[in-house]
Image (cartoon, rainbow, N blue to C red; front, side):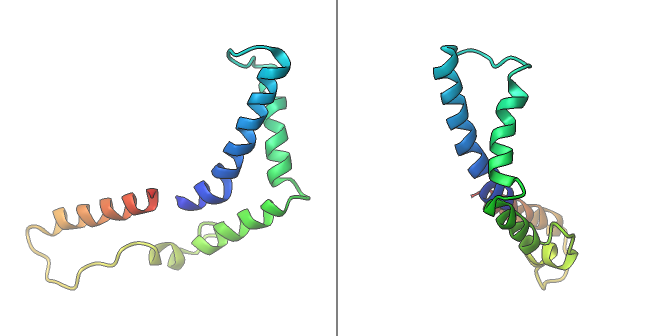
Length: 110
């Protein structure tokens, strides 16, 4: 969902890339992060971006609430989907629905 991209993954990616660059400079390594180092590195962006004191935490909650994902609001979720055509169902209805759903999914990916 776009909510995850905008509110969670986008900011996380920026901070994570910065942390990885700093780690590479400090260690002089450009290879795989060890299993021992990874949790400590990952703790920094999650705490800074979404910890109790973070303003992003409120933004993240608001984004999920607006989409109806959490708390679950089926009416809001369903309102984001394309409406069904007002025509009588025919043999091509299944194919048309697949195209409409595909288009809706692709639009969310933009």
